[in-house]
Length: 445
Image 1 (tube, rainbow, N blue to C red):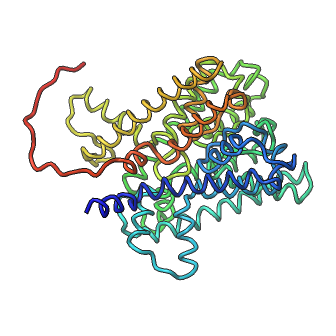
Image 2: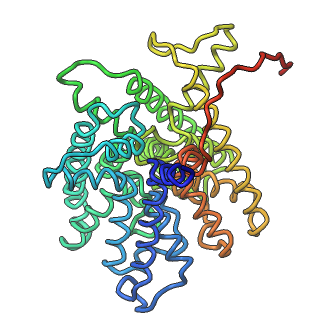
């Protein structure tokens, strides 16, 4: 009996997702250590290969080596595939092959997909995945063509096409990797790049359920409560982030100060869009004022939306806590959004996610302070970037010790899978309580 219970727990969707990502990371590490993957012709340090594989599979973008000068086209292709697997999810892509082969999804497949995209139920899960895959590959293909045409002005046709494909995948999946070495700082005032890159990052960060809703909007003319909340809070955070960065950095010659008005607007908006998930930038992050860096840390911890290619505590979790705060201040017992009451169990789940995320963030910062010789804000910034799977850095990452690299690797993995999913994967079997204890009263505040 005990053995069957243990096997059932090992076969649970959260556990399979954790193991699946671990296998992808391990396989990616081995491929990146091959001589064919490196310009030097010999394997780099295994920790550097592991770090790059974790960063790509967890769609973060933090790097300890320069991608373009270290890896060959084969190595960069491995990174591209890892980003696609990590962004869309290995179960989502496995579903694609199953559907192409005409195989019906089993109950176990549907349970895994439900967990992978944070859906409420298994109803119509195959249809949702099909629409999301069509939308994802279509927008990546269109963006790759536009970016390739843009870069044909300044590089050979073959390289422009390759760069268009790589960066389209990286931006949509919020991977944070680039082949320019200094992110996209030379395109701070480029309208075409900023528009295409912003559309890719926003599309990838909204989440599969929202993409499915938008896909059907023309036909059914309505959105779910989840989609309304995601779109409203995402739009508000983009506008708020752009305004704050524009004001804080307007006179900073190391960032926006050296740009014209058009460049200032483009850079502020793109950095606001990118900060919560993508990790790409058109300004020097290390040159930002400390107030801006701290504000970006907050946005990175909030992250993207549930079931998306981004990390963080998620936009809906943040909005639920704001709603709870306002409800308490107004003396209301229920939390309402768009004329819908939020169930108590969802509020408890949101609170759990926030507490777990902040607890992990605090532990990671303390560990980095013990292993690294760097300023507190810089290490806190790296920790927030890792747990939010964002990939922005103030320049600390390449100089991390081996212990620091391993700490960041674990943090990126937790950030991508989600602390609650990992907790569900390793928790002991829960037992149902057949009674209720008496209610007690505690003084707080």
